[in-house]
Image 1: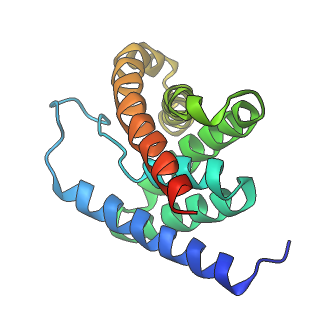
Image 2 (image 1 turned 120 degrees about the vertical axis):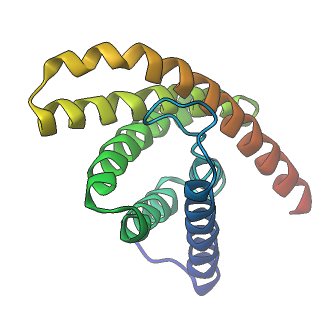
Length: 165
């Protein structure tokens, strides 16, 4: 796929914004003292890109942010983020076909659920402990809340940017 200089510049800018949000969020204490629970604010950029720029640019932004973010967070976070991010991406890709631009927040919530499922699957493989699946309900509750927050933010961003076109 060939992208114009303008598209590439926008993708680079959105990747930089997502990476900056990712790094800044890592410095903020978790909202609840439960391991693995965080807002995932950088996903606002991914959801925005999926519905405004399309799947190709969204995937490039997501993967670049995860790879570059792992330089700051470590190799283990790369595995968890990549599994969760790619599973979330695939689900949002399917949802993009059936949801309207007024339902973007729904894709974010469902994507967050699958992000958590991807992370649990990696944890099971890494530790060899299937019992880790018992942690999934906690992650799902936090994922739904975080997905709703980031989804509403992405929805607002998409609506706002549509008005500027």
